[in-house]
Amino acid sequence: MKTSIATVSISGALDAKLQAIAAAGFAGAEIFENDLLSSHLSAKEIGAMMRDLGLACTMFQPFRDLEGLPEPQRARAFDRLERKFDVMADLGTDLVLVCSSCSPLADGDRERTIADLVEAGERAARRGMRLGYEALAWGRHVADHREAWSIVRDADHSAVGLVLDSFHSLARRIPASSIGDIRADKLFIVQVADAPMLEMDYLGWSRHFRCMPGQGEFPLDDWAEAIRRIGYDGYWSLEIFNDRFRAGSASQVAVDGYRSLRMLEGGIERPAAAAVELPPRISTTGVEFIEFAASHEEADELGAMLRPLGFRPTARHRNKDVTRWTQGALNLVINCEPEGLAHSFDVVHGASVCAIGLAVPDVPAALARADLLRIQRYEQAVAPDEWPIPSVRGVGGSLLYLVDAATRAAMWAHEFPHPLEPTGPALLTGFDHVAQTMQSEEFLSWLLFYLGLLDMRKTPQVEIADPMGLVLSQAVETPGREVRFTLNGSLAHQSLSSRFIQNYFGAGVQHIAFACPDIFAAADAAIALEVDRLEIPRNYYDDLEARWGLDPELVERMAARGILYDRDGEAEYFQFYTRAFARRVFFEVVERRDYAGYGAINAPIRLAAQARHKPPFLD
Image 1 (cartoon, helix red, strand yellow):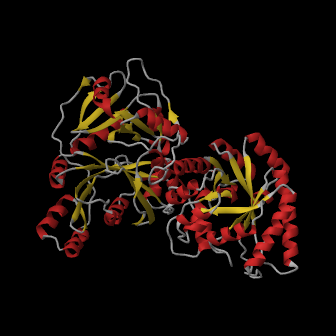
Image 2: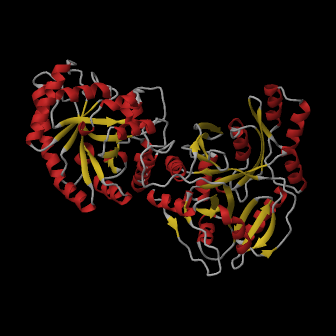
Image 3: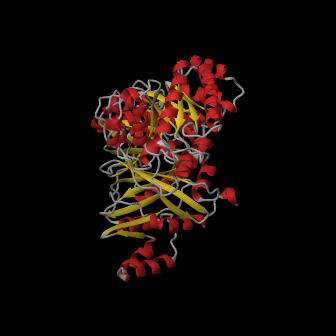
């Protein structure tokens, strides 16, 4: 795939944008006119800079309101076009994007439109230039790529071709099958954007809610496959208008963009029909372990929270100050090493989750996919007698370890040979989900990270009412739900999510949910060992009984233990929470009875209960 991105997609000055685009791995870039107009560099200097960076100038855009105008507006439009040809020559591109007219003066007569494009094509050909005609979803007379193609086809000029933009086609729900009528030699460039499905005006939707492929809800796999099927082999170029991206890091958004195009190449929801060099998304059999970074004092405090939940320190690392805590198949690792990544992580964040280990069937293929998606590997010193576990950088600078599923038992036996305490009864059976909190601007980046690297699907985004503002939450899950991550971000500065980020100095794991077969037995065991649990108000249980018609005795049992409840049809969900350890990470225990969600209806209750315990930095 030949990759490109429009400079309007990322933030900053034009020269900084181009440097970020080149560093991310793109082959080319479209120059957005306003970026050039506001630059302190001339078009010739920008063109030279792009060549030095190894970037092709794939297109200059946009040129608006060309066709169907009366005089003298028509003459002025063509004079303006000639001037843009001069700019294009300086930039080093031969292609200009001509949008379907939105001018109230434009005549919708089809023959006039064709005649104007033919004249523009003649002018372009004399300069060695080309025009790409695009149907804007809100175009005054041409708003459908089928109509735009019929005009280009009938104009039948070598310098006049079509530009396909996924937003303009898919926002109008135009079937991808219609692309089959387009000739590949007349398709000059393909522009790509995803978006959530919204009911609003096309212009506002396009200007504020476009996102990278995989971050939205458009059926891009069908659309891209239809384009490949006609034999198109030109540039695939991102054109993204999004307020979050304009407020974010240019380098991160550029990397996200490159990653998203590689995902589109291999297939977002399903593998692409054509063979590509990108290995398939990584399947995983589950979360193998979660690692905490902590000082010795913090490790003692963390252990005091884990014991009531049934965990025991069962083994010590062969060389390092690292302890393995287990319960049944669950593994937690507490790293108290005085140097290395975990120590640095603890210095910056305090005791917290510094790594997650996933069991995968093919580690080399997983690393190959990470490399091609520009996901950074992390290399650390390993003693000759230690088991090497590859890792990549994850959320907030944490690590994502890739554990060979076939040798996981041997790994534990080798790395933790020094026994400590015997295991206790296994009341908890697995990791249900891991909740990660991040800046609102980072939300889509981490969604793309997981969807690009792992074989995961996203659930619908939900808004959760925090007492201090809304929190956006979305889960990503493996097909069999062996691994679930929930992503949370908020623009409200006083919400619990935002306070976590401020106190934590960045994104990270805010809570870990454990699965159990009997929530009441797990709660009773934890209460008997004086677990520091979250207090749920009585009003919640009075409403619960009325809302669901539950047995009053069941409601009383839940109230006595601080257990929350949700139902979806006949499926049921029980959950209880601990207080936060070091005001950072807290734990959840859940029992699912054929329930697939995350108890979002209870989140405001939990958030309000947590908000009553004000963090020290707000005192």
